[in-house]
Every structure is written in structure tokens, then in C-alpha cells.
Length: 104
Image (cartoon, rainbow, N blue to C red; front, side, top):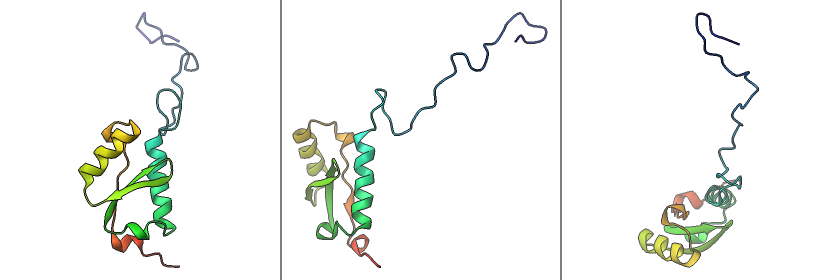
């Protein structure tokens, strides 16, 4: 298909069209562990599984709370060293006491 008054042509839309990407995937197609851990945190929170951690930070990794404590920086740094994961990829939310209340 060519543009009127132009010598340029455009490829057929089906040729070399960009593939739809999954926003949860990394370049290698694997779902990002950080996103899985955030999802696990919200599921634990909704299920009342974080009540014992109220008022603390928790490290969520591979769907489980693996560490907790009052100091965000210290907790993040120690978890990153132990797991070999960059600091910015560690999921360390604060569990508010009021968020731990599960109402039926």
C-alpha cells in the first residue's frame, strides 16, 4: 500500500507487527517474581495471614513472609544480601495494625 503523492510504501499490518506483551513478564517471558510477591502479600493480607506482623515491615519472597522487623532499610538490605536480589526487587511492605483486621 502506498501513500498518495509519495514513493514510500508501508508494510502490510500483519507483517512484522509487534507482539502483544504481558505486562507481568520480563524480557525472557518469565513472570516477574516481584509481581508474584506483591500478589502474595495482598492475598495474605486479605486472608488475615499477617496479623502477627502488625506494626512491622515484612519481606515477602516466593509467596511467604521470610523476615520481619521494624527497620525498613536494615530489613531490605539483609534480605537482598541473603537472597542475592537487587534492593529494588525486594518486596518489603509495612503491615499496618488496622489492615490486619479481617471482617467477615
